[in-house]
Image 1 (cartoon, rainbow, N blue to C red):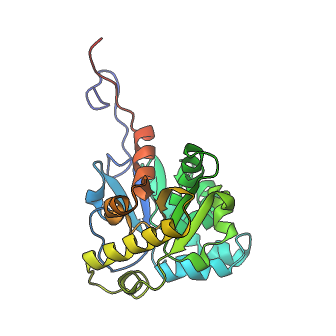
Image 2 (image 1 turned 60 degrees about the vertical axis):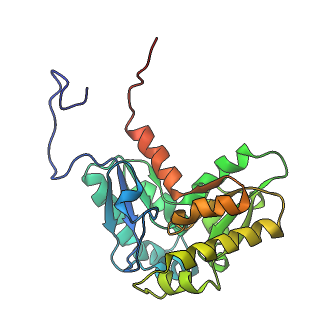
Length: 258
């Protein structure tokens, strides 16, 4: 039974839309988002509520914010559209909030302080969990949108021990750069898959200590299966984090035979 069918349990209104447990703050971009990308609603087997953060392009979120002091006034002003967006999603009834960019780890605490529901801003928050799964001496290979701008401040925001990871970026991958940074409105899916697989394969070849892979960028999950086929390693991404939190916010009763 649910709230709508449970006797004696009235429903409470106050908003227009219902049935959304997870709200997703989206960077602004017109590039294609195929199934698997966090900006494609069919990625998940449950409804999610997307909210586009106006002015928050990939370049601004990944590169420009990295130049600001996370404790400064300029940074707080720059991320105001993000915190306002988080409040909007919470007001719409979302029980947890995430983003579409792993680099949002830089303002994880700012988002968490803005609302009264759980916030998991970055896929990097999976790293401590994955690292604990691995035997001593094994590390997590992180495939990121831009390794140059992934800093100690991002790791601190996500609770990541830098010693537990090995990082490789998508720098020099023409299709990824044309869509993610250049706002190209067409996407060669096969080419981007090949680029992602190539980066992951080179990362594992460079460091045999890698025991699992995390695709930091939320545009890369469509190619996770291909990465796993190429590396024979567990491959984690943003979709796992969203599914886990959704499962915690929308518990289902267990059924079976006793």
